[in-house]
Length: 440
Image (tube, rainbow, N blue to C red; front, side, top):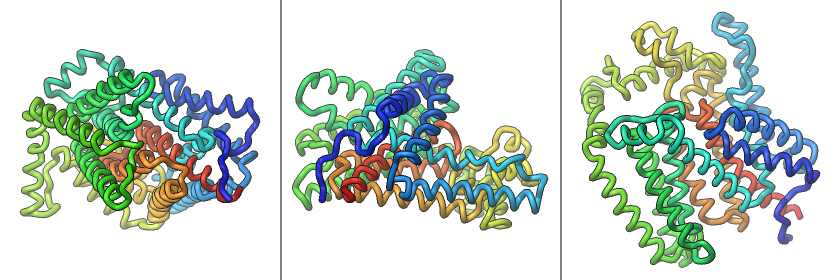
C-alpha cells in the first residue's frame, strides 16, 4: 500500500546525513571549478555513502547496484590474475579496481539524495553552475571564446575540446527538456526565463564551437527520440509529459530553439561545413576499398585503432588483457604508425576498451548496468515517483551517452565519470524511493 513518504525516504543519523549531503554538494559544484576541493569531496562522498548504505540501508543494499559493483570487482580481479599468469609483462602491479568501480560512485550519490527530486535537481544545478563558470572564466577566458567564435577548437580549461563539447551537449539536452520548470509562472519568472535563455544560448554556442561531430550526432538522435516520445504521449494520453508544458508554450520554445539553431548554423556555416566535409576522403576510401589502408585523419585514426582493438580482443575474448589493455593496443600493435603511438593512449570507444581490457564478461557487466538503470527509471516513472520530464531526460541522455561514447571514451575519464555518476545517481535514487514505497 503506497503512502506519502517524507523528503528523505530512508533512515540515516542526522549528522551523518548532513555531512554526506554537504560533501556531495561540494563534489558537484567544485569538480570543475576547483578540483583540489571537488576531487577529495568525491572520494569522501563515495566512501561515506557506501558505508552508510551498508550500515543503514536495509533492503537497499540487496538491490542490483551493489551486486553489479561486486561483479565489477570480480571481473577486474579475474582479468588481472589471468593476464598476470599468462603474459606477466603486460600485467599491472595491481588489479586497478577503480577503472570500473569509479562508475559506481552513483550508488553513494543516490543514497545521499534520499529519493528527493528537489535535491536531485539542486545537485544537478550545482554541477551545471560549476561547469558553466569554469567554461566562461577558466582556461583562456573571453579570449578563448573569441578564438572559438572565429573557428578555432577550444578546450575551456577542461581536458580537451571533445570533453568540453560533450559537457555542453549534456547541458543543452537538460536545459531544453527541463525548460518547463524555468518557464512556469510564479515568483522570479522573468529571472528564470532570462537565465534559461542565456544558458541555452551559451550551451548551443559551446556545442557548435566545440566542433565535435559525435556530440552533434548524439544530440540530433536524442532530441529526435525525445520529440517523438512527447508527441506520441500527447496524442495517446492528451496530457503533458515534460514539466507541465502547454502545447502553446512547447511550440513557442521549439520555434525559438529552431530559430537560434538556424541563426547559429548561418553564423558558423563555413566552419561546420568544413568540419563535416573533412572526412569525405576517408568515407570515399572505405566505400571503394573497405578497411584496407584507411588514411590517418581524425576518423581514420579511430577506425585504425578500432581495428587494432578488435584484433587484440579476439585473442582473449572472454577475459581480456587487463587494465592496461587500451595503451597496450596502441603501443604494441606493430602496424600502427609512430605518431599515433606518440599522441594517443586509448581507443576512442568505451565499449571496445572494456572488451579489450575485461573481455565479454566486462561488456556484459556494462550492458547489464545500463539495462538495469533503464528498467529502474521506467518503473519509478510508471510508479509516479519520477517526474515525466526527468524520465524524458533520462531517455534522451541514454541515447546521447551511447552515441558519444562510441567515438570518445568519456566513461574512462573523470569528465565522463562525473556526468555518469551524478545523472545515474539521480535516477537510481528515485527507483529506491519507489522500491521503498512498494514495501511500506
